[in-house]
Length: 470
Image 1 (cartoon, rainbow, N blue to C red):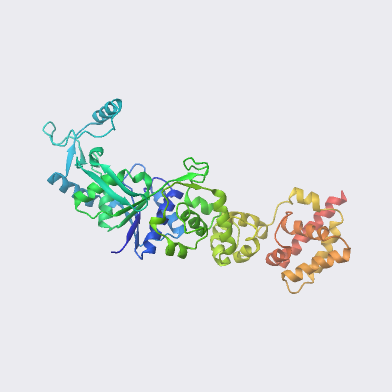
Image 2 (image 1 turned 30 degrees about the horizontal axis):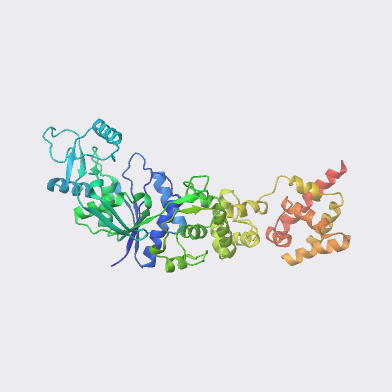
């Protein structure tokens, strides 16, 4: 049997971390078993489903590398298929028309709750339609079994069972003629030959209802795996302050997709004490039976630690690919400036995110507007003029513009002036970068280029002469 899994988000919002983890687990299970991964967009909620949300989901899947083998399929394009099956079920009694008004249903619910009963439809329209005219609005309900139990083995949670007496007759087609989520899901899984359904634990209560529909249709029942929820690190429901944001926000904030996937896979699954996994390792080792039943806590600090690891250890060319978005966002001309691979080499040991890396490299592409006040106050003294002039004169004579030779100009100036290295090196750093902290000056100046370095030294010398002449 070919393993076939699916990810089936509702496009009522962005792809968040909980959905991304579910997609990852489903994708990994398919890849581990040499199966197929299907993407389905469950857009039956026409009022809340939007094209921007669909685009955000697809973008999130593509950015994380969770490629699908089939799809995306859209439920709104399959209404004819759903309705044909519903008509068959109406004809042979597996479903029935319900004429109950909204007022009657609300009254029934209030009465049941008042009596301490579980709110559920009472089957009022199941047998008798004599009081209704043919043109009266109606929905269609699935005739659920009234006795027995629904049992299934959850690959994460073990055996689960429900009494059919606790399940009411689901609406499978609304009065406006549109089929509903629980019915569409079953038909889709049947038609798409889905063998394993991986989804959030909030769907557990839907499962027995859907199993009864599978059986009523004569469709094979897939295996289920319900993943626990993700909590904030304080134990409360994940919210924006914890990190429950769009997956693409993590791109915007400077995370590598490899880091996000590594972090998400560990939110509920593990292999011994191993923390860091390449994608091939995840595929090789992942199994649904090893996923925890317990909720997991999201930690932005831990995610940053993982991201820092990937920035430092992935091939610099790969990190540079992701850095492009940050540079574009800052409108930095990296085509005519330093190569992005060089930026990664220079800053990868200093930055936890690509956003930091891009922001810290701005002065390599754009002229800075002013010196950092604290750096200027600390390192620009009157004798800095002499130091900068001597360095500039030596820089002009450097023929092989490489870090080692550039370093030598600063060291020679220090020896010539018989001062501490900081009296020369730090004014040069502020002159070249505009700030008091930066990576190695020789490497920076090599990447920046000789002409720009000389121009910045010149500009700073003129600035200091004017400043101390006052």
